[in-house]
Length: 233
Image 1: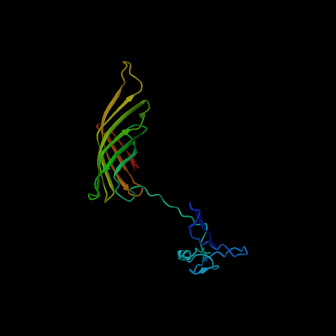
Image 2 (image 1 turned 180 degrees about the vertical axis):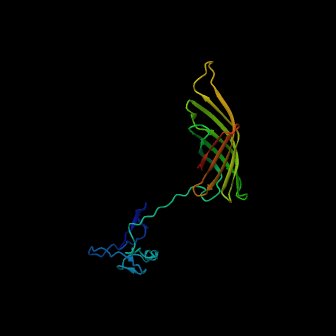
Image 3 (image 1 turned 90 degrees about the vertical axis):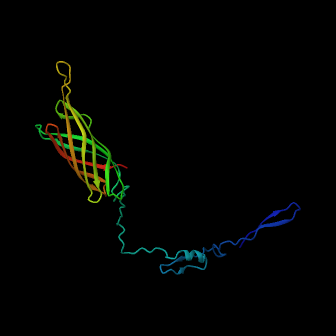
């Protein structure tokens, strides 16, 4: 079965533009539908005579066959992979620390923030802190009625082989002051310098570093606790 498309020329003659195109056999002349062609699990073509041999060849593996032994209730959970997971990741790490000021009674918990950048080469198997800072959280309260501010720089490194992190603060200063002015109008305050050591472990799957925090000021008062930082995206 086919059709032809023609055009009328200027001299009135007729020319064929498209040749007769074959039409797919959609069924017998009595209106019955053609039998669909499918491939069985063994790869052989099944069905009627209609259809294309090329299409049959495309189904090399055959149509999928569900096995009765499969449990339809089974579900798979695909875990999300973090950028840099499984490596000694460079970049910015941010988190916090908390420690107990035990020389006060009752002991007071001091909370602050940590941010630093690790840089280095994979060949050296060691990343160093290029820049870092430790600072107080907003409205740090040391004892009722007294607040304070503190800040410090950081130096340290991450050993990629042992996954050990060591660091310390530099130029740490703290000022504690009362919210109630003195009779002469001044604000009583106490200034201190401090040093801190950080010792932790790097988790290359979670991309976190956590460990021990130990802060000591220039008069021997200490604040001991822990810290945790995470690699930022």
